[in-house]
Image (cartoon, one colour):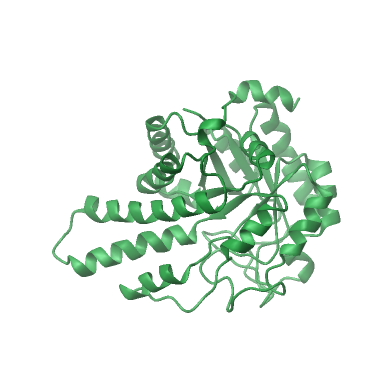
Length: 345
């Protein structure tokens, strides 16, 4: 199994000027979708697991599923990442399970919904970095709260996020604070707030600079050029995917996602990890809805879950090509985490 840390992968991505899509998984079909797309495109892969996914699938089962699927493709460099860890305890448990990367999201308090102070974020994140780096495990932090620059509201997804109104300084990461945060915590990657948000309803119109602040990425990158930036809530919600979902009975209001062209602009200015989840969910659900509509007498889960897997695989394939990671899989050498840890100490 070519398991590597997030830092190893993103250092390589920075040297070669591309970004890496990070896909959330909850079950076997989604794991297969990511790794089959990586195999087809010769890409490295980031598999993300949220706290909700761990609860849904069960830690032991999830670990075995991931291990088994990854063993099918030992040549693919893979990062297994804890998404939105709400506390050091969550991050440490992920490390014990064999994750090679964790996110300590100290932008919110441990309840996952109350905005935290800067000092709380620094102290909590630094405590995770101290342990993780001795093990060769990477840490992603977050500064600023995801939410809409249109409405001023935060957002909640998968049990995580602030739902109330937030001041602008929380919805946009401050470059100077980012520099101080990185210096005091030693994080390998930093998730920043620039107007993106989780879920399907990101923007009510095609985003412009007023509601998607790509310029802020440039400003932060100038302050922390050696820390890899992360875009959360970056599904693109293409029209054809929305149309397919509605065609087979899905109820989805008109919405706009993060254009691939804007993500590519972010990649040119330091973004190395791009989180994609909603696009995959929509694709899978649309495929299942179509199957049920066209074949109402069928009841074999293997048939519709295979179609769902293939639909997600197409999304993964497209993003791997669009973000530039395709063609690099075979070029990346995996260093055992135990050896990589010496670079942190």
